[in-house]
Length: 297
Length: 319
Image (cartoon, rainbow over all chains, first blue to last red; front, side, top):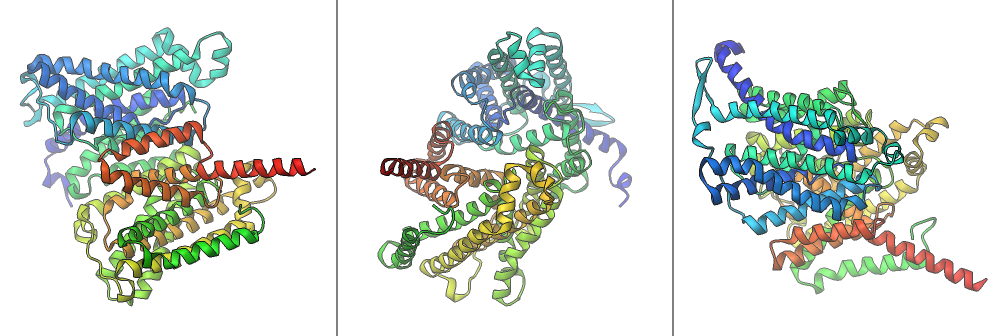
């Protein structure tokens, strides 16, 4: 099939841009997961639930405050709410479990996912919720002579900003540097007289903040519903693994692969579009069994 | 309990248990017969998983796929082909074993979390196929109203069929675990390097373990179709796989009978709590978290430990 004749080049380019903007949300979520995996060695399945809570919290802020102010406020308040939740969870539960083996931790976080999922059902009900983007981000701009949603453009801008902020946190702040050191050798960091427990706590909260931010950002683009945590957490894990466990830039690479293969799949085989990212993951892992970039594990 | 040879007492208990199971459909209401049948199906699935996770030490995180493949295979064979029914029933578990071989061949080169992730990825691929391929698998509706041979229709008939197959599979699994192959699998779990050093091809044994486990998972899938008469893509979704892992955890990893107990606990909880509230996963999550905190060896593992301690104490006093 001659692709160029069915779709113009500009359509393909635009579809790539849509894929890129979806990658940005995946990146924000996966980067949080990767931070937690790298520093704490906890495969946090509940990360997806925190993303869902972020989206629902964004909905609440939007309905309470309303208007454009509500939207911008939700981008701050919803992740903060999620971060607060994770702070409680970390201090009350996780900090007692770090020495357990990975399988146990994974199943423990799965139990948290079950609990949080029902909590959301309890507080927000089972109905679909939706958030509308503020006027400034509604509508479309013309790119390559085709309309491109403004909100996706906004995502394309916010993604690199978050990535840059995370890079600043990990490599420029003291806490970030300590957590980086702790991810390589936590015994040694503890032996230097640093309170590793609090470093872990902060890394965990930052990671969960990103999950909440991802949820708040995704809210205007799709229906907010129960069960949105199930697919996203699997995707986030796969992204983290193909990028290299604990590597934040790996999360970016993985998210780009995931988003772009999906958007190209939509173009060429719409019915089976969701298969392509999984296929890409399998191929990447068969060639680079430990992920594309250096993993800290 | 199952260490070494089976004791006379245990054998007696098993026979009595079997007899009770055989007369059950005549005494208890149909609903409970159905519940026990579904517990048996999940128990077989959980035991097949425990073969590779508990005894093999592999991170088999998407075991549900083989269950789903078995179920879809029998459903598609029964509805799309005109083959004799018994051929369909026999070939479906082999389809699952074949899926196990292919997925296993790809996964086995990696270890731990990477193994788990590539398996989840491959499994999700199959899930997405079943979910979207409306023309062949029925898409997200699945396939419903699969007609069974007359001997298997009705709750009590399918109950007996499931019970017989379950017992046969358990005996087979027990023999496999007690065979040299089973011992090698456990040795490789405890120390992979040492096993390789004495000349055991560890990966090949593990791959074989995956194929066997997926065969039995496929049998469980067939039994599911016998019981429910329908298949749907959720059978292939990764949350089901984590649920089976939870059953193994609840019962106890390193025990033979643990997964049966785990499946029984989980399904009876789901039914008994599910009647009263829609928030049953909340309660399951809390129970699970408590088990991980306080009973990491699982319910059955805990009981075994206590029994062992008591036996030792008795022996000590007698001396």
